[in-house]
Length: 521
Ligand SMILES: Cc1cc2nc3c(=O)[nH]c(=O)nc-3n(C[C@H](O)[C@H](O)[C@H](O)COP(=O)(O)OP(=O)(O)OC[C@H]3O[C@@H](n4cnc5c(N)ncnc54)[C@H](O)[C@@H]3O)c2cc1C
Image (cartoon, rainbow, N blue to C red; front, side):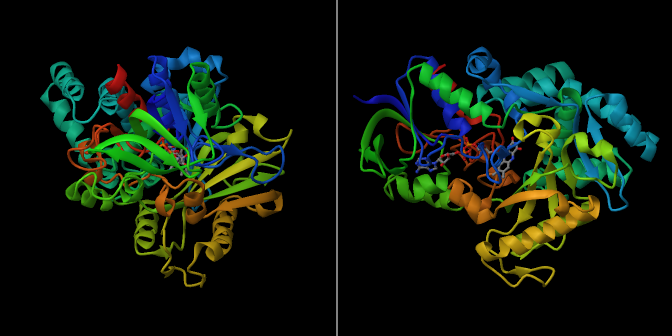
C-alpha cells in the first residue's frame, strides 16, 4: 500500500513536516540514510563515555520560538522535550583581555555597554524598544511562505500599523551590510564587534549586503527572550519529534538511504532505497539539498533543463569545522570567571579580522586567525558531563571547502584529513591566548573537519553548515531559486524542504512546517 507521504531525510525539518502531516491523519514514513535521525541536530559521546556533545547545532532557541513548536508544544513535551535556558547568553572576548556580553537581565548588559559608551547604552535601549515593535511583524514574515498572500498581508498590516517609514527602515535593515547598520547605530568598536559576530554564523562578513538582519535579530532576541539549549543535548528535539511521530503511526526507517526517486509521466511515484527496497507514495518530500535531489536522485532531465541548470548553480556557503573537548575544568578566561556562565563566547574581536577571515576562506586559504564560537553547554546543563566535568563546543567559522593553501604559510597539507589536526592546534593556540592553559584541562577531543561534517550529513556540502549561502541572491523568494521558493518542484508530487529552502538554515523547523501546512492545513 502506498504511503500518503514519504519524507526523505530525518533532519528536523523533515520530521516537523512528517509530524504535522501525521497529526492531520496522513500515513507517513521518514526514510533516513544514516543510522541516527537528526541530520545537523545530533548529540553523541564523541570524546569519552558520559560526555554528551552536540555534534552540530547547540543553540535551539529558533526551535523554541518557532510556530511549529507553538503548534505542537504539548505533544512534544509529552515525548520528553525539555529546554535549559541561559541567563548569560553570548559574549565577545577582546585582544586586551576584556569582554562584553548580553545577559537576560537588561541592567547587566547595559552595565557592560555603558562602561564603554553611554551613547551606545542608550542606543541599545532604543534598539530594544524598536525590536519590541518590529518582532511581531518580522517573525510573522519569516514564518510565511515566500512569496505568499500571508507575507503580503504581514507587510500590509505593518504598513497600516507603523506607516511607510517603518517599511523603508525595514527594507534598509534587510539590505544593509552589518558594518553599515552597526555604524549607523553604535560608536564603540567592541559593541559593533559583539553584534557583528552573529553575521558569521551565517555567511555574512561585515561588508556583505543583507547581513545586518541576523546580528540585529540575534542580539535583540537574546536580550528579549534569552537563549535555550536542549536538556541533555540538542537531540531532545529530535527524540521528541520521532517519539511523537511514531505515536501517531508514522514510521521512521533508519540506515537505508534513498538511491532514486521514481517518476512516471513527470510525477514522483516512490523511491528506491540503497537496500533495493521500493516504497510508493502519493507525495514525496525531500529534506535533502536540492543539488543532491536534482543531481542524481531524480533522473536527469525530469525537472527540465532550465530548472536543473539553476539548481546546479545553487552556491554553498563557506565550510565550518567542529572541535569537541571533554574538560576537567571550564576554561579560565582572561576576562574573568563571569565568562564561564555564558552559553556562547565569540572569539572574533573586531570587524577587520572578520573581513579578513572571510576573504581568506573565500580564497581557499586556511585563515591565519580563525573566528570562533565557543559554546559552554555544561555551564547551563551540567547533566551533559560527569559531575564536575565539562564539554566545550567549538565551531570554527569560516573555512574553505577545498584548501588551496594556508594564509599563515605554516600548514602544508591541502586535504582536510591531514589539515584538520594542525588547524585544530591553531584554534587551541588562539583560545589559549584568551583562556590560558586550556590544553591542560582537556581530557579528550574529537575534531570534525568540513569534510567530516559532509560525511556525517551529505546536505552539508563542503562542510557548509547552511546548506546553501544566504546571500541576498539565494534568500527570501529566491531560495533555492527564483519561482520555486514555495517548496514545489517541476516534478509533480515532489517537494523540497530543509535549510536550502526558505527561511533557510537554523533549527526553526520553518520550511517543514510551512510545507506541511500548505499540503494539509
Ligand atoms: C556545525 C553546525 C552548527 C550549527 N549550529 C547551529 C546552532 O547552534 N543553532 C541553530 O539554530 N542552527 C545551527 N546549525 C544549523 C542547523 O543545524 C541546520 O540548518 C539544520 O539542522 C538543518 O536541518 P534540515 O532539516 O534542513 O536537515 P538536515 O539537518 O540537513 O538533515 C537532512 C537529513 O537528510 C538525510 N539525507 C540526505 N540525503 C539522503 C538520502 N539520499 N536518503 C535518505 N536520507 C538522506 C541526511 O542524512 C540528514 O539526516 C548548525 C549547523 C552545523 C552544521
